[in-house]
Image (cartoon, rainbow, N blue to C red; front, side, top):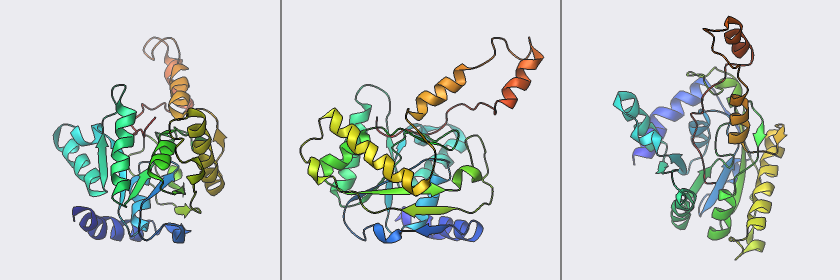
Length: 259
């Protein structure tokens, strides 16, 4: 009830009036039954831009930290993520990935739509990164089709580190459902999971027309952070300028999907 009230009263009027997002291929999203919507992840705005354009409820998996933050900001963040239908997932420990898959299977088992970002975190530079195999495990174990989705324009609107989005044209593009029934019973084979995940990422790539990077986004971001001057700005004034020119390296504040 809260999900649809929040979506109808707050999100739809606000976003459609401000951004006037364009949606393509909405016919590919089934009107009933379980399905996985797998999209690229460019911005915090993705969390609400896609759900606004789909009539059915989309349940996303979100990191636990979004629900446990301290103070007023933490409570508002938790309220927001509950409002968009997110489910908290603990990412700590060796069993975290399987816990995320189990939670997703419960959602799909109820015949609902599950939303997931296979990259596991927001892209820091607008490129599409290698997908994690959790989405394949969810698809093969549930038998649900995968609907590829591309968010276009959200990176320009609100890249990582920007608090308020810019008003730019936004397009949400859905592709044809991907059926992986040919891999039934093979959800425990790593090579199959990798092949299915790569097929999903290729479908997203065709929709988004992004540049593809065959490495995980978290690894690329970590490598970027590792390239820093040896001394701080206080010791070497040119260092601060160099960091600024490199693009204001930001800490990772995004959520992760199943590994």
